[in-house]
Amino acid sequence: MKTHTLLLSVLFMLISSAAYAQNICYNLQRIWGDGSTHCAFTSLTEYKGSYYCAFREGFSHIFNENGNADGRIHIISSPDGNKWETAAIIAKEGFDLRDPKLSVTPKGELMLLMGCSLYKNQKLESSSTLVAFSKNGRKFSGPKQVKVTSTAAQDFAWLWRVTWHKGTGYGVSYFKAGDQNKLELVTTRDGQQYKVIKTFDLPGYPNETTVRFDDNDRMLLFVRRENGNRSAMMLSSVPPYTDWKQKELGFFCGGPDAYVSAKGKILLGGRETHMPSRPKTMIYCGNADGDFHETLILPSLGDNSYPSFLKVGNEMWITYYSCHETAKPSIFLAKIPLTFFSTARE
Image: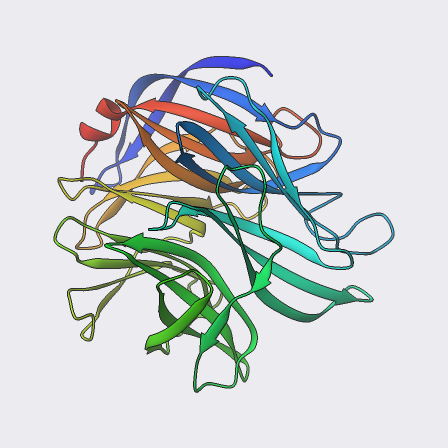
């Protein structure tokens, strides 16, 4: 795998709509992919002294050359973030597995959450969420369907990500309700059984949602939306998480991930589509009031994005996928000095 040190002119958009350029030097490495397979949708975490990155691997974004969807989950590991090797591969015959999300449970197990879809004649017939666990990062239990106790009649429900906070897992399941989507905030103690604590009826066909917490236990939800103005939304609440504030962020954000610093600064990353034919992997800086600005465009081309954040020492590590080096997307790891984000405008 090649390693690049990039010197980029990064554009910061000011309130006046003027822009200035700032130079940043950081390391960018292609950690997996040679263009022969479609590698996408990343999740990065640290577990028992090693780093793990999970992603979907298939023939294309969905279908293979025979018109079937049969993506598998590929997990790679590294002791230092430089040299990576396969740790595990999870597949389910006849089904498409995608959007893997890694987390570490309170019991000390590595948890893998993933979507599971069934297509017939290239039409989506069903979707569900599977979960598997590992005690060593290499051997995983057989994937089982998560169970959500809900009063809603859910069709095509998908629990997209789980975030652990003080012994409890939190996530947002999205599902079809007529011609719209609804969101349910759910909690778990074991990663497999979930109960609903709040239902959101938001406009704009909301779907992929990431849950994060600040040091004051404020819960923040970062929501992708598909219709209307397509602006991402941020929802926030303090314990007991019954009263919620919401704000449109003013930009589309596909596959959102977020990192909240001890000082309350928020990094938000995802696919931006100012030019629909040229999507980019964008990193934003902002705060809990929902004020965000464009901070960094990672090298990206074609089918790309779905970043994952991990703070490592004095760097922010960000995995994502992109086609800027290979015919089909590969997995990249950017290691960016935290000082760059600490000096960025909130």
